[in-house]
Length: 278
Image (cartoon, rainbow, N blue to C red):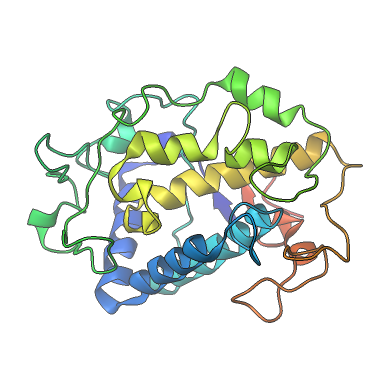
């Protein structure tokens, strides 16, 4: 079974395998299809519309499926690769190992945000930003500029303690675990990390930055931890709710995937903090 590891524990060989698979998926055009899909949903998901990937209860199962499909695409290139997760409560600064030149590269230069080192630097010639919100075709970051501090473990623990998954009005105004994790209310976890990284991570085309997948792998891990802490707390809403995805409704763009199908991550992968068997 696929085991997702903390990026801080990856060996140099595992880092190279992951980044090489990303570059190859980009070369073949497969990577950009994921960027296009994400951007389309983030633009259409509003508080008063038919929302699926964001601002809605299905934020977590939708991204779980999205990551599974991306991980599968990488594994077609290299079966040994799994998505690592970035625990931003522990690796909290621009000096953390994931930003080193042998992995993701670091922050962007001051004048235009362009990432200058690592395998995804524009100068390396293998990471053109093709699906973009402006004319710039290079990867951009501004680590710690848009917001100074990443979420803390205490803030994460406060959200994991929430016993209710979600609540009406089922959007960015809702109170409950999902919306506090997504970041529209409370201490702001997921959204804050996007802003902290900056550059494309602060836009709808955020998957252009490979850290997107590691960030969301950790968000997914937090959902798994919440499920383990609150086994009697179901996905909500269950049925009959306008404009959102109920438990057994299909989630676009898939025609055969429901939140119910995504509730047990162990059908697909394990984290390094749990047994790799089911």
